[in-house]
Image (cartoon, rainbow, N blue to C red; front, side, top):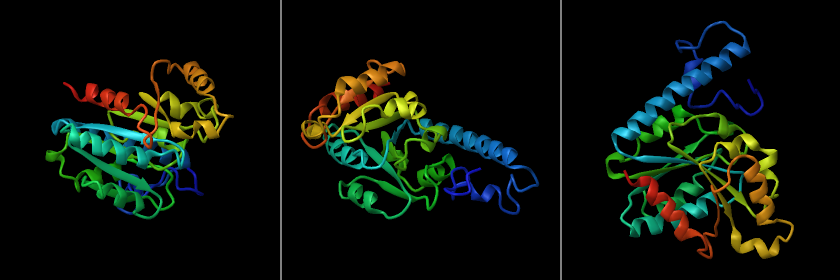
Length: 244
């Protein structure tokens, strides 16, 4: 278990190892880690069933910090509302409620999760957040995970789909360096396309090559929430997955 970042022991599952908790018993670190992951998967399955009972599609947004997750949500939420699609958001950050305030300004139900030292969301955190949302009023739920290209990929939240963002301000070889995260993606959005002319060391063809080597051919979309390029295709992708 990582004692520096709290990678496995999060505020969401802390109760499991405290006195009286299901995992509060003598054991080595490997046993504890296995137990925590098992408990997370069990809670994730419960979350997924809960969402399905309400007929809600849940999407886990993952990326490195600064890739444009919140900006994408802001623009998407406005257009989804115009299409009659009711969306809610769970925001994950180590500290502050800045992103949740930006989402709330769009008139959308939102719950902020502050993880403290934990570098990812877990299923227990999401479970608590679900009970603070008006699920009967939602068709779609975005879960904006903590900005991190490593740990979020290892924790099931109960989502139905994974969306990974790769910004043109990052290296085009990020998929090769962080393959676990990108392999988990149902769709990769190459974001901040409006800045491409200012980052001539980033090649769309190069990024798509690395993604293709991970089996993601046909599952990438260049997009700019600022200019609007690619937004119509992105929203169409969402609508197709919302259709029974």
